[in-house]
Length: 285
Picture 1: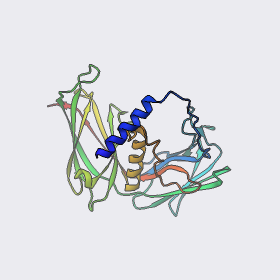
Picture 2: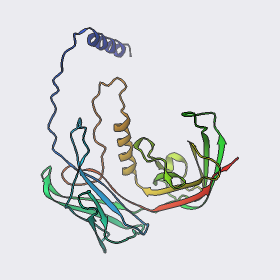
Picture 3: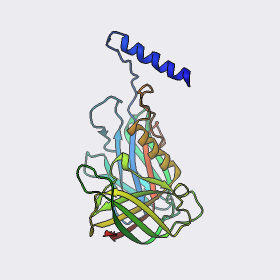
Picture 4: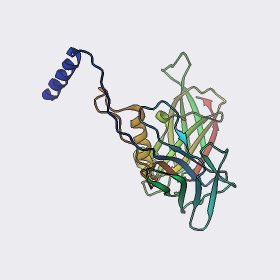
């Protein structure tokens, strides 16, 4: 430990005492990769897949969309075709409303015209796992000792009644809505939990606590999407990239989060989920 502290001191002294010089960064030219974001759920609706191309690390422009691809999702019996809509957006949607089924293995296949990283064919698989069985929810507001930006913030406790299936090892994306608006819509607030880590496994009631700006009468909705440990690790990796892990800045940028897209070192994730929603009116304690 003493050696570590001394080393840091020497480094900082060297940096402070050396005259300022222009550093010539030599960066590797990384070829563009396909970036995929897509899903299918057990809800009857139009499902979508977004395709983009990765950019250089220091690029300050938006990622380029990938158009004119052939995209399908299949379950071994049915094949759902996705078309780019609107044209030029890189967003591919099922031509009809479709509904996934619990227990089925879903395969996403993507064929592009011009190769990316020497590949034109990409694919991913995901099993649509069972989800939480939720019947009702009670949302109670408590006075909070905290305040942010002069807003009277309250503590929201959502008690969800239902059943989280056994055995343990299940993971869920957890979304919170206030009057229909998704609140955890940024990477740092994105929530994926495991039933083992949260103690939810096999339980019939579980509580979620939030510090948010709710008032009595607001419509509170919680949404649970079943997923797996691979997606849990993927989101954890994205959060590490987003927040950084080295306070001294000596380590360089983190590696890419590991997704499940196969072919040409593509990035991103394709997931299949069962969706459970519960709604309640917020009330004061």
